Amino acid sequence: MSVHEDNSSTAVERALSILETLAQRNSLSHAELCRKLDIPKSTATYLLATLERRGYLRRVEGKYHLGLKVLDLSRGAHTGEDLQEIARPALQQLVERVHLTAHLAVLDRGEAVYIVKVEAPGFFKTDTWVGRRMPVNSTAVGKVLTAALPEAEREAIIKERGFKKQTPKTITTQARFLRELEKVRAQGYAIDDEENSLGGRCVAAPVYDSAGAVAGSVGVSGTTAQSDPAHLPKVIEAVKSAARKLSQQLGYRP
Image (cartoon, rainbow, N blue to C red; front, side, top):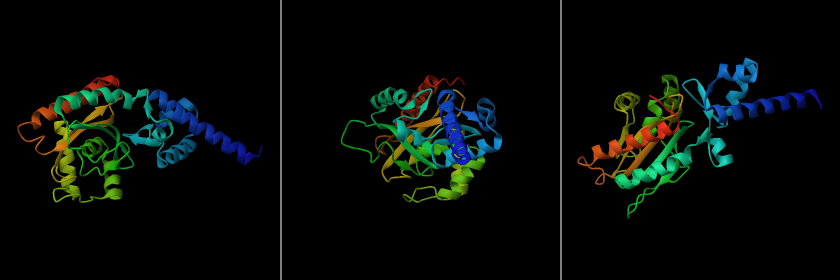
């Protein structure tokens, strides 16, 4: 075996060790991975950057988590337990409670990605599917996921993705978007009020993992008539309750 092949083999082994360790430990920082796996800092920097760029890792508040590319390979991004399988019963109960379609979304490369969907009964069907990517500025789930990010990561998403206008009500300026995210953090939920689709209204709340980081966002979608001002408080409380339940199942303790 040549020196090049030996070095390449070592790099692959270390990259796989990073993925396997994060599958067991949920989230670790750069320094924690270096210590645990005995990887030189410069090597870890290169491997982590490559895995993040390819979508196998995502970074939240300085901690690395498994990314959605793992979902493509294994039909489930595992964080100790399968978030999708944990979420489905809770989303089903949420649908039965508010009669709106429920989703679980995660943030991946600056977009909200639906990883679970439970359709509400009735004639109205949402134009969503598992794997669909949505803008963060016009969706309730996207606002929740973005609100949890450090300022630098929010700025990077804004710079890369911009503000695509979906309807006349879409937030299309940075100042207004940042004010909206402050509101989301303060109240613990987000609303998309015909910002992504005219006639549609969505409510979402954050799901926290055992480390206190936002692991995903639970949201419900329907028509503005289904979540009119008289019913909206009930919908908001139901969504927040479902998100709290999922957070507890992931080991979150406030």
